Image (cartoon, rainbow, N blue to C red; front, side, top):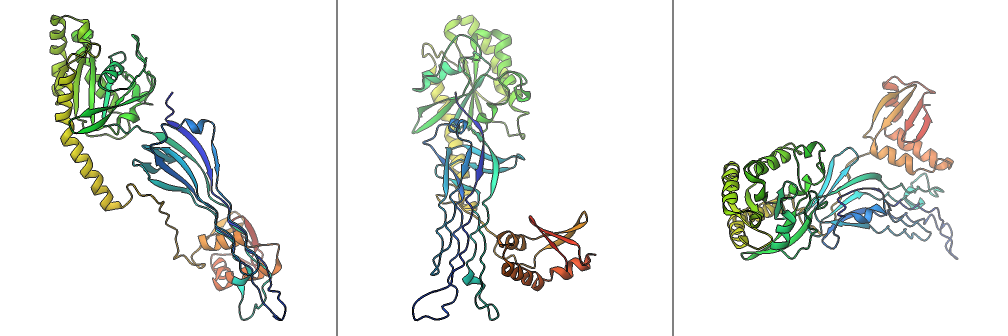
Length: 436
């Protein structure tokens, strides 16, 4: 079975701790501090590759943990940065957070995105030397890496999609046009997962997708539900497969039904170019074929497409179908390629081989806000929260240094201006202090 949904937990590597070390060498009195910094934790990176077919791997592997950064050491030796953890997913995978926000859409081979950043390493005691603090005996701890749950959804990337009602012969048509070998049987919902095949079309090779049968109300969960509608989104061209043995009533309703099924799914989309393939003509006589054509042609005109009678079983009409597909697909392929090049020139994101991570660097300790939190005062600020999280609060000298930083940033005065008084609790991250 094609696995096209998965939920995973990612936790980037923690940063290494800085070292507290003093230089000790013969004939070098007062060598001074020489503790190195801790290394940065490894990021979690999701990469798109055509070597992976679906998301089945994530049925058994849910938690991914990044490599921890190395601890700093004496003699100014810094800890090693943790290497990235690469998670391979199929091309066409969407990555969303638990709130449903789209984080990335990996549509090209080699595209990568950092989904969890490694924690910063702590600074060694060498970094805290000053004119009044000649021999600091404290260092910083490393920060934990980011952790989050992610939802992965695979949307097959196919050029042409075969859609239609159950038992219309989509799988038989895919097998006749390509070298794919989907399961074929004479009952509805034989196909329970999309199947792919490749076909030579003019001067190009195109990918065909056989989408499981759609029924009225699928976007609301009827039948197989909306699970497979996502695979139709990326197709450039749709082939509506209609069962010729369905007669006037069944044949004419099929294309309109499929269009109604797709319309409520996700955001409204422009009408997709289409072609109607009247399949199973070998099962009926000429009079029945004419009757089915009379029913299908008005519906085909609504979507601006031609109708091609075919038989996947005998091969009748398949060459005509290929010619019609070539005529329709050639200009669409040119537009799609131009759109991809334009996206590449505008964003520089398409097909990148290295993950791009933007980390704020212009924030200062003084960039914070103060707000009441029950009987206490809550301080929000990325830099000051990081400093508190990395501080060794069991070390008196480290606490004094932290207090100095807060005073220089004017934190006490800001809290008093907001209404605070001596003895009030001050909350910064996970730590609690007393205003004095």
